[in-house]
Image 1: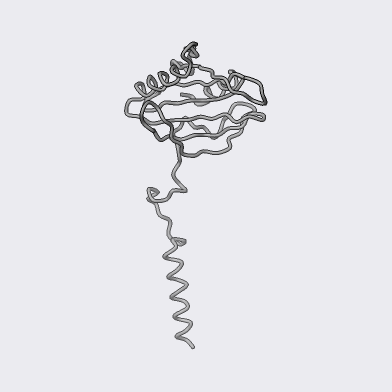
Image 2: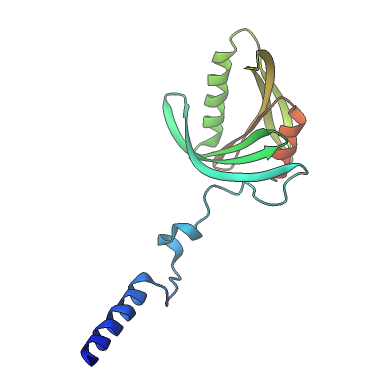
Amino acid sequence: MSSKYILLSILIIGSVFSSGCLFENNNNSNNKANQSIGPDFIIKTNLPPGFTFEAIHDINAKIGNSYINGSEGVYKYGGQYIYIQAFKSDDADALFSQYKEDLRENFRKDNPFEEISINGHAATKFNDFRVDNGETQPRYNIIWAKGDYLVQVGSSSDPMIVFSLASATGY
């Protein structure tokens, strides 16, 4: 009978040690739950009034002839969703130029760009048009390159909503 208790004790202790419940792994490189996804551009706190942070996830986008991985923060403002997308690149300025060129090709007749300033650096506001409930409505976005990142915030039918969230990034 005592050998059964010893065997049961060994199994319980072994399962506790193997699951890592007793010892915390101080090296977080293998612990995905403790790693933050996305750059600091994707803010989760200190949001402008009316915004709520919903989620963050990985995305990819076609820019030029390549697909690039990035992160996307999802925010809700009223009944609409606004996004912050960030793409890391060795040459963010070249990626920014290529992205604008791709957009320019979609607007062959019109220039959708307006150069603005956000948090002390240059950015580009652009709008496209979407059909919502049978009505054509403008959708505003703001893009910029900062450090190793191309960042895009949008889209909304109200450019001030986009500007407010873009300014809140602090970048």
